[in-house]
Length: 339
View (cartoon, rainbow, N blue to C red):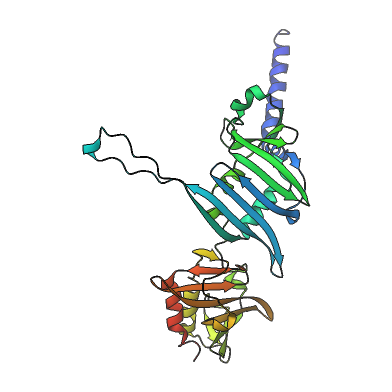
């Protein structure tokens, strides 16, 4: 009996320890998730520029500030290779046609929300772990023999540089080497993925930074005439003329719904035909109570296939091209809104 007691005691101790570890598992996991290695410091407010250079594309984001807040001017210069058409069956024995020369395209855009979130991930830049220096003979093992690209982030006047290597075995992180110094880290792979798709992932899609629910009053101006409207709090998306705030105006509400369907297709810094506020088809000013929230101006210019429509807002900064069909619907019904 005495020989069994030590085993029983050991089993009881192990069970108690396991229970404690199990009961605290979530807390331990939360703690380890917060344990990150700082590659460099800073805050997103101090990020001046972000640049990613790879063999086939260069991405740059330059931070700007105005009365509305911080925004980023993005430029993507990439190389696109046209694939040759497959040979016909009759020419199956013929050598494949030569590849078409690579075509370089440049896309310029405005980034706000997503670009700001990227800046927040890069200052401070926190790695999952630090691996230390890697011998040149092991460069292929970490993907540094053929790196994905070079990331350069300017924070508070100092440029920080990372050489981006291959993905880690799990595929969630990517190896990155600090330059100068050569220290290797495992960083979130999302950073590189975002930059590789910058023209779609960082381009700001929203026309405004405020929510629709924030707007309680607006003013529509057309050809020197204007009209004010107020929202009806008890009915979502319902509007009334400011002179009759209790009377639902369905025509106005339907028109504003069409304005809400104007979406970004591309950013245009300088349209071919000069545009001025005076040449706008119409202008909407948005208010939250007495506080100005922003504006929207709609423009029309002759295009290759009919008319092109552009929008300018406080959030997009540049002119934004929208679908011609959507812009045309807004213009057609405008005469029934401001008479």
